[in-house]
Image (cartoon, rainbow, N blue to C red; front, side, top):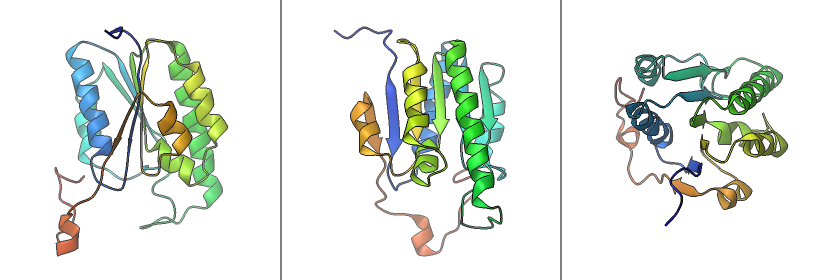
Length: 179
């Protein structure tokens, strides 16, 4: 039987919805056991959505850091690429500090795969985070396009696959469900 206290590397990826939701579900479960949790959100930035409000209600056990400058190159993004890179590098530094502090059994790096895929952070940046964690820390990384080297290293990989989406029927994202 596997040792229960071994920290896992979990990756939620794919083109379907639910990656962040799955990670935040783990946060809720961890809080149920009085664990301290740190969430660092890359990319999402200035948008206000329900998960932020919900996570704030789990304070002080959950510490949430939104460091992105918004979705890069889409929707209403008017920031230059370097602004996004700078924010992502700050996120890497913050995540590294939180991992090294060894005060959080669970750390979630939300949308880190996207930051990596867009070139906002490097493989070396992510490798530094993976190398810094203790044997008992659980690390969850979310976002589309997880690279093969990361999924090979992970203990658990779940790929969210879109089968059907209400947007395809003209139904826009809904408060409390999508944001």
